Length: 355
Image (cartoon, rainbow, N blue to C red; front, top):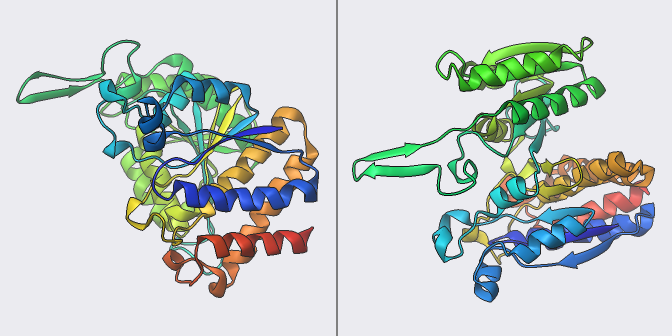
């Protein structure tokens, strides 16, 4: 089983190394048969090829079973016509990784959520308010005059139907509830279309409850009563913001695992950015990418009916929990003293004990 490894920018190489330490320990323990292929994205690729996301990398991703995608410094890239391609957008749109799956749950001694939170935000990732992925040619963001800037939001029935179906299918495996988050009172046509498609899909899942909540109320309810939510289905922009809020409530963005999933391929990717201010200092919390890699293994388990991948994913998740449960084996952002490498080593120790 081949995984394409793309370390990315900033702290990306460090947390990718930490994640590979865990995967290399899990590989023989669970008989995964992993093989790793490496390529550059971000500034390293820009220097070598003139693009932050060369076409060859996308081709390599298509040929892989899965991808480990490190964080990127897109805000600092040069303009697109000078090679500054948004890697996340390129992967999601050109590889059709339409579902950005972001779980968040409370862990003992961490976070500020009221009660027990265990939810998954299912975020549509190929369109919406993100103008850099809304046009086949040209830009979805433009300025007709020096004093007017316009940005195009795109919502399609197909994208809404796909993310809704993924959300309901996941909820059926969990607590059988989907919350559709929208702003149809203001975005009458676009969010109205989103709700129309969600309701159509809901009719195919009579055993799953559907509730609909306006996005601003959802932000308040996530803080007040996060335990009421199971699977949250929403469009790109709302999902981006709400998932960061949920992760912070769970203990911080460093704990937020995620995958970008399509029909035939998935990429593990952190919820957080590249944190260039601490790059190279062995200070970064690698939890997000380690947990994302576990999610990728779980996706591969479903894709290939692979029980070994499922056991490994559960074991890695449990090993991270065990490491975080001890304040002495947390990273600095969580009040501990461990660096990136030592945290990964602690996860491996717990993984070995479980095996």
